[in-house]
Length: 165
Image 1 (cartoon, rainbow, N blue to C red):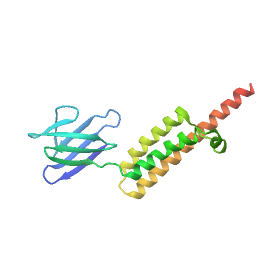
Image 2: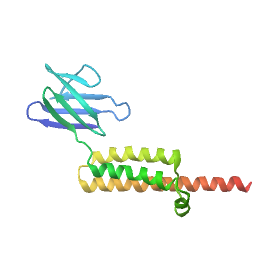
Image 3: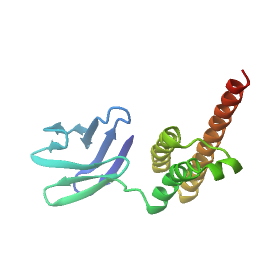
Image 4: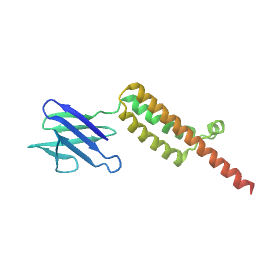
């Protein structure tokens, strides 16, 4: 996940964070910043500190100045991301509701909802327009609920098959 920011004093700041390992790299005007620790870097003769993560927004603090490298998620991104998790936790753990529309709940539903939350935030942060962010968020909610429904049907068929023996 790469973010490029043009700053009037420091020039082009390129921040890259690996999704799987969390490894962060920082370059300023094409020159890699020297890593001091996990969050501290040397940019020329100045010490800089990275705060945050790609999901929650990253800011670069150089002396007294704070530069927003990766934007923080908007409120609607959080709401859309958490909706599928809440749906699976609430609906999937209520037998009366599952009789109407079965979905998995419990640990499987929570895990699926957590994965949906992370993927939704990730894909929405990559979108530039509000419409695209909303479409991605709603699409991931729909896909997550569909997967939870299919899993519930598979489990119900397995139970029926085992009871028929």
